[in-house]
Image 1 (tube, rainbow, N blue to C red):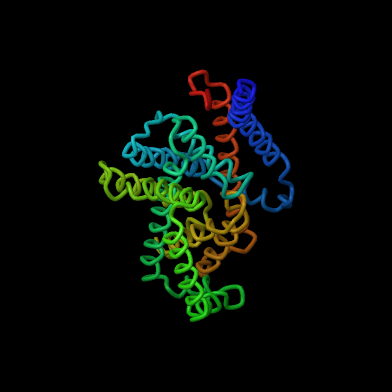
Image 2 (image 1 turned 90 degrees about the vertical axis):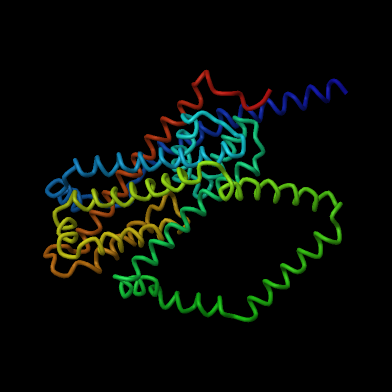
Length: 352
């Protein structure tokens, strides 16, 4: 019995050490590989445009505003966690946000799971509760993008409908699927079956475990409605997205022809490009690489009229440079974050 307990303790310590040091090491190596192995694009022509046209002072402001948005995101999440009586140091929350975006570069969609696990393990808090707070955090972003989409539809509905209708009428097919009685009949039947199982077998260990998980998720999610500091939470939300919008504005100002787009077409062009690229970030990819450039190029094409020289190559150069420097920033942040986690003596151990 003692030997079994010792083996379980050794196993727990092993996995705790692996989580604390092994995962960050793998991610760090992956980030370095990503930094030095991206040779898919021929940079010859684009480098000349960058050398001749780009004002890197605006690009620096673009990056600083992106970092500020991440810091504000950490501050907003802190309000939610404190309402759950989970109180990690602000520095650790900032590192968790930095790490989220870096992990997503290597393992798409796993960054949010990583930051949940990191904070939950560090603070010895229930994973499902922390995960629920993260879901609420991301849902706030989704709602913000939808609000911006609706607001942008007013001055630029034609352009957005054209974008959403790309790929051979994908929007029409999606609408047809969502309007199918067969789909909704299946959804209702599935929900009824789940409800029956939960009511009929409430004491079954699987059902009990699922109830516990759902309860934890709901606790972390619903805290937004009742938590103290809701006003500050909303202010941080505005600050996050204001930083994102101003960051893109700075990127536009970095190149003379994209700056001319702002002069000729006004804030509508900026809003359309921002919404298109925000929607593109929902496409599963390594940190938005690929979909983001495609959306930006499409947005610039919509407003290229009257801007002499704003060719597809120019738009491609602009999109690749902006995404490239942002990716480089996330790589550096990732190396910094996982270095801090690995070597900080003040970090709480993940297991006893």
